[in-house]
Length: 491
Image 1 (cartoon, rainbow, N blue to C red):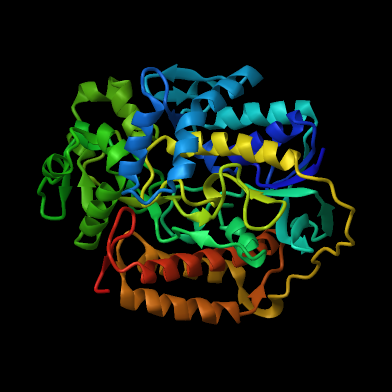
Image 2 (cartoon, one colour):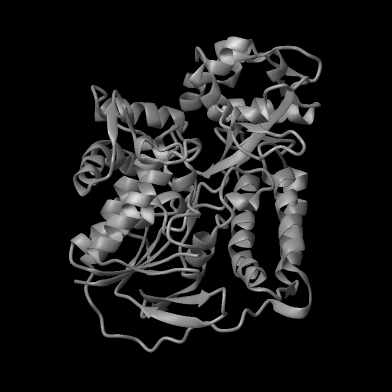
């Protein structure tokens, strides 16, 4: 069997690694941190949406297609809806803790931290992977997919703590590096979600699709000196949410969208709620009246769950708290087939780094079903890839953009994130996008000052951030009409 190298140690990468290893492959997983701890899977609610418990694959297919505004790849979507149930059953057979209900599954029971429902899932997957013989190269960033004779044959990696680089040979490579949430100044994604896979894919000659469709989670705490974290969309079912003039606006919006409450909105109208709250934010803000909370609600576990942060952050407050959207998920990415195969022989992709499944908008719970289903399929396909003679590979050593005379990389990164939020955030204007593209071109020429190991990591992540920013901006500019997670004015 093949030797497989996987870039990324989140839910998609770990599932692919275990599947490939169980198929007989030698497997190495590259992670920028300790395996899995900085992944979106760990930070997720740990919930799956799938065809089970009386929900048929056809019903699930129709719901997902509608949520994605008909722009999903129908072949990929059919594969997902038919295979996600068996995929989760396989994970359960490995020892992953899962609870099934009608159209849903949950991995939350294994989580030690209620705010990170997916953390137990990745902890279990890491343990299963290590027990099965998967090797991990941690604290290392993938910098290049080696392509020789039209096929992928390895990965160049750099240990960002010490600066040493090495070349990992492979018969097949799987990109499972997640999205680029940290491109934005407002996001619930962990620090290391910087679009590395998009940059690697583009450099390898692959195409990205649907990059204009960036999903923004509707409700995030936007109060000054308050943690940047999501609140549940059901928050407005418990307390008043008003605009800057004190008017309630959610009940009317829900009626217009055909959803009965915040729970249904989370699954079927996230994009609309994100846009509405983004508009309110530009008009002076949206405010959750936590100061009006009845005493009995503080003992309601469902209400406490909606807050997502410990009640100590809220009790005793005399004024409402400002809320606004947070970047949450990239619906677009690498073009793949049903087994995660790409246009480059031996190069596969799975998880959030890929595009086509969600179309213009993602249904809540679909991300975890997606990463598990296609992680399994990509892992098995990569394991069966033909072995090839080893090529002479030379790892990238120096970071070409780093110079002692450059601008501090942390300063450039934060500047980029703020400009991205303004230009390609929830509300987009053509003129701002064009200016942003010019800004990206100027950043490509800038030298970066990176003197510490952490700054070296930030420098290694800049290509991913820039590639992601450019891809989103160009796709947003090309799509003239608003649809799903893409909302434009003045095109």
